[in-house]
Image 1 (tube, rainbow, N blue to C red):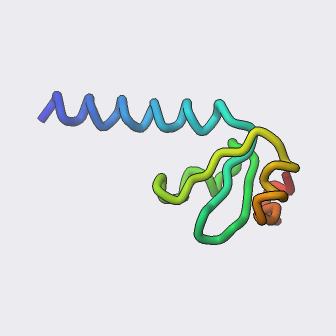
Image 2: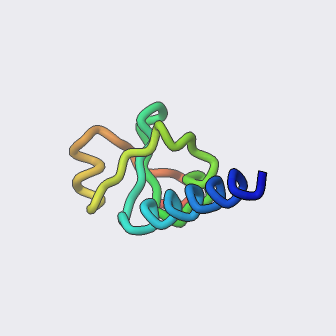
Length: 71
């Protein structure tokens, strides 16, 4: 059980580091994009995450800015 818990924690840390490495994170379902540190990103299903390097990249992909963090 301890090994499993350690693996789960390591996976969460790795996913968080990957999300924070990009400037913007989009949600494939809602087509909204957020700053990487927006609280909506932490609630997002990892399979729906789309990473963008710029605001223009997200907009050109058809995503709209989050009203909460206003990227």
